[in-house]
Image 1 (tube, protein in one colour):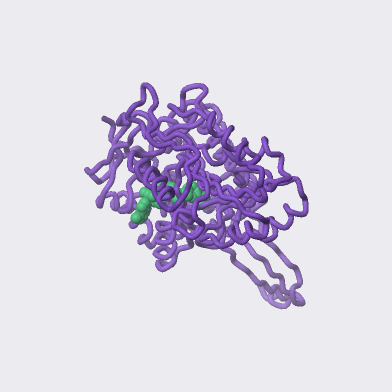
Image 2: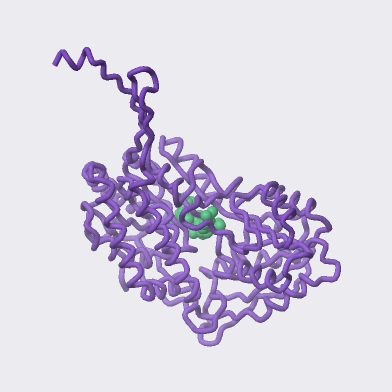
Length: 491
Ligand code: NAD
């Protein structure tokens, strides 16, 4: 069985740790590889950081037009190997083929936007800010940066950060999720083919130990994290306490409102895609669906009809709408939360527990679940389920529904389905969430825009992607200059 190597100082090297954990295919439980884990992975972070510091001192002086050339090559390699990469994503994360290909596309788009760094990195100059004095703001790279990523997008999330970090002149260390490290192994085969200084971009495996080493290392100046809220909060507080710049994206519980004037059939289909796509394991998955003024149950019936026909199976098989969830622990947890909802008074319209897929009997499968009338004063309505479970509730007015949205702890996404411009405007203006969708089910910002998130869904100031990423990976320097003619004449 392959023990995964780290990529440090431009080479594939064995981890300092002898401890490993299994990487499993969630559809079959087949062991795909063993990934380094445990205390000794701290040494790997140390070696990678030393190499990164050295490479940074060279790379920061390379002109930005030259720096972005590696991104054009990286884009071409990602495009040429899209199918192979997608199959790896499906086998380690459980996604369907369409979903795996979709996330690679989003990764590529971030590389494309980062190719604009030669313009985006430009500073400001004001001549004669006072008589004979000029003032300028320049952007310089921050240094060695690192990202720590979750299991649910094995390729895309690293690209919210990596292309911007290196285009702006930084060195970069990737610590992928130990549950899905194989996609990054393949991507680092491509990174190995780029013309970069040795050590500029490294891949270090592990779990909490390697993360703690990143949080503690004085040479690492910036950390980008994406994962669950408790870990995001920990990363943000420990990283900032150690003087680092940190952006930490956390979990979510995304509400979606449907007004009676919405296109009912279209809305139901889009909402089902949002709730059950990636088996509900998207930070922008719709979770709580609020039908407003749906006295005749038209919206509820349309949702039920579209959801019950969705298929579950091995993600690489044709015609499968939804794959398994990531681990058996995750499946057990989700089943427990469904029971909790029932115990708290919910009515089960569809029960996805006890799912079985022929040929994949050991897989972590659930089929789509709908819980109706989930209690508003109980715990489940606030808990991120991160599985294929819809909570369906009804309210009388849009005001009540917005009040409910704004009462939640998370603020990753909120969506509204309507044909009314006035309702859409009210919602856009009043809903407390960082990503808003109007007749959109997964309001995922494209690479030009920051991947926003409010409240317990984000800790920090600058988000990933686009101009925010350029700002995150650079520090501003303001220079004020005076060049008196009298002084010039002396020399
Ligand atoms: P996770 O928090 O368990 O793990 C994320 C990363 O943190 C992994 O690399 C892991 O090794 C590391 N980690 C885990 N526990 C740690 C600890 N105690 N100390 C230090 N490091 C630790 O998250 P996950 O289960 O991989 O991913 C799912 C979560 O990510 C969900 O909550 C989801 O909403 C969230 N997510 C958020 C966004 C967003 O943009 N806001 C995007 C994707 C996923």
